[in-house]
Image (cartoon, rainbow, N blue to C red; front, side, top):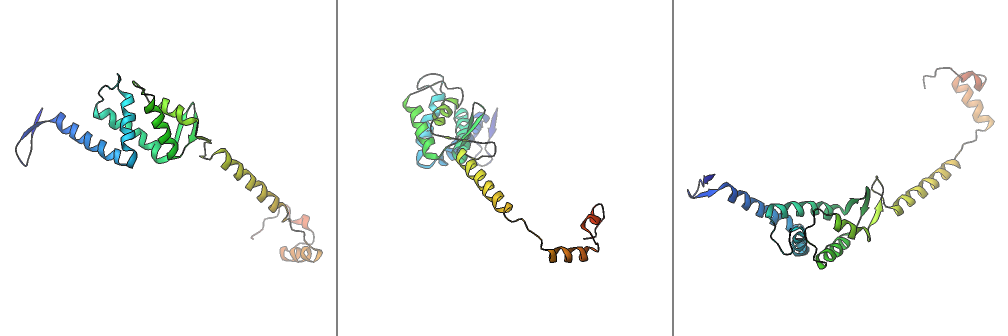
Length: 180
């Protein structure tokens, strides 16, 4: 289907317009990788069906968009386990995949397997094993601190409490509603 430009009255195909938009979006997505955009471009070549074969811009855009999530968060999942890795580790993994000149990759799992060697496993809460250990140790410390804070009422304090509550024995408070 041909369209007409409202400014210059030139005719163009819808596919040409879509391809132009895709290339624009791809360029924008690659800018998010900064100085490593060429490495990411090289990595997308691993998804070609043959060595050094062509890749549709839409497919490259999809690959880069998926990789952007990993780049931004540093979190990935493989074998139903979550891992966290720093950007330096991602760069190292991308280089390793590119150096092996892999091609016809169906998804990012090969990269994830490479990254897993340098990544830290994290829990469902997003904590690494070390962070979880520190959190548990913190809980233990707080529990022991709280345990030491048990208040012992003096006979004078108990007497004041009974007077305040309007009872002679503390057992009279059981089952009694209190207005507070």
